[in-house]
Length: 444
Image 1 (tube, rainbow, N blue to C red):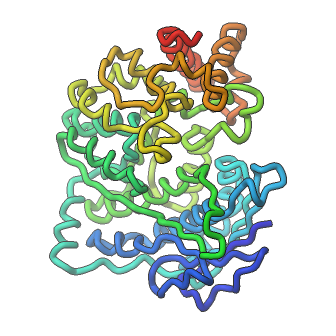
Image 2 (image 1 turned 90 degrees about the horizontal axis):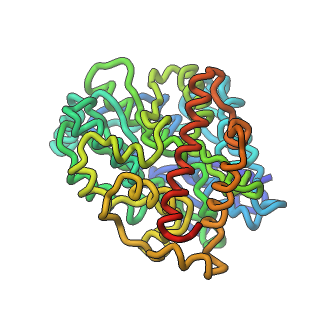
Image 3 (image 1 turned 90 degrees about the vertical axis):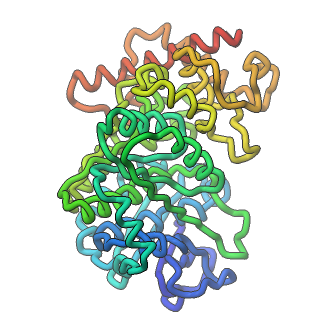
């Protein structure tokens, strides 16, 4: 059991030991790196700079998400798990209104368990801080004005799918006027800013950095899988939704989550990838679980993936502004490993799907890759696993009469027959896109 205790006041935190990890929330007090870990140091300042008061309930959800992100980051699977994967968490989190969240505690735990593959126990108590008051400076008042006229929220990561999502909303005669929500991870901001240059219409920007820092004695013992990142992202979207509603006097907002249907489903390519290598960050089952929670607590948002039934190649071919997309593509990132060398690897599953989509769309210009020619990857024993897994899945698809059971391995599907069949078909089309690309690269 990995127990994490959270508080904004370090005096309220217990001492660190093997069974107790204290984490300071926010920056109300000076951080002692020798005694506690910390997360979201600059988040309150970011929120105060918005120039408007956000809902306390939205801020409580943000606090929950920051706590989950801290535990997920500070608990290295390889060190604490019996099977080097699944972990067992117990979190103690103070909130300004814990009584709103206690009734949905079980649902949150199940959603997080599905998302990260871990066991979660959440304990909510009184004593948390409310949403910070907005600044009254000229700069913050001008910042508030940038949110006027906005009607939705859209997740904006700097990836190719999120670029298509933003272009389709903003460059399409302003089909919607979204507030683009971003993580401010190192390196990501420059990609997001580059893609932003092609956007032509009314929109806003809001970027957060969870910025987790582990206490000195545990330096280097962090987990890099980031399986809980979409929970973190959704909490930022709820903050953004609160801003849009407060400034514009609207009661409900859509939260757009642009992700191609194939990667959203992400069924395991092989039997050994059912657990650790099959992410669920935007799986429709996870989003439906979160939608139910948001409905119960009264957030009045609608989560929508407009590309749930589109492959990545179809997204590119059908993008509403092809000229803008072609300019943006080289500045987008899809790779799961790109932070290691500052360049996309070209051989992981996300890279293969990206390259297949660009091949499918007939685009000639792409970002650079560490491994440009995939035909060489089969000679590299330490780099060929993902391509071999994709090749194996392609063979399996050809020998499968129905993919329903396969697709269900990554999560429950909707009861509606048309929706369920549509999801299975987008998985099959997505894998066939990859097949065409791998053939062009002489891999299969």
